[in-house]
Amino acid sequence: MKSLIKVQFYYFGQLIQKRFLYLLAVIILTEIIVAIQLKDNPQTSIFSLFFYGTSFHDVASNRVQIPVLWFCFFTIPLFMISNSLQILWDKHSIQLRGKGFSQFEFGLINVSFLYLIALTYAGITFFILAFCQKLITGTHAWLQIAETSQPFLFFFILLGILLVLLFIQQICSLFSPVVGIVVPIIILIVSIYTGTKWNLLNLTMLARFPYYSNFDCFYIYIVLFILNISYLIIYKKKSL
Image (cartoon, rainbow, N blue to C red; front, side, top):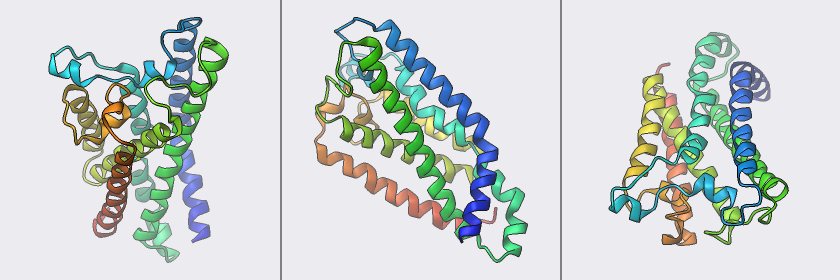
């Protein structure tokens, strides 16, 4: 299994390395530019600007504007990974099966890659936001978010939703790479324009965040667990 992890990690890195670095650079550069624009502006924190989203009031009054930064934050990882996991299997499945590795084992490592990418992306972008807020804008504390006093809880909400979207993408990509991109984007757009209270993506919008309790974030990880299991079951049974 260790040899499979090493081989799979190497080839996976080769597939997404450039795309990952380019897109990560784009989001980091965006954060820095936004921070410079907010310099010496005590009214708005960079976290609020990125993750404010749309409020329930905006939706009810039909005055919704697409929160571009929020939307980009969640779509960039989709393009980082795309259908690279399927390409990886297509290129090396014969070789791996010849060495006695199963498709299910391959799927397990795929899951770990999704967690690794999501954690790396969310961690770096969140850290850069905190860095920019403190050292560039100079108007707020490192992790000061006006809409919540629990920035780390909000981080794990963002991470959980990122993973939910990535697993939805990968499950759909088992049938069609295009559908794998389109479905999560549709979910994001629908979340922007609707105010359905049970939609877990509401928790990622600071405008809607106060309407939920801290316990509600656990539902994200329950859904994530279900998607984990679903992905592995479908991956094992589907002939790629």
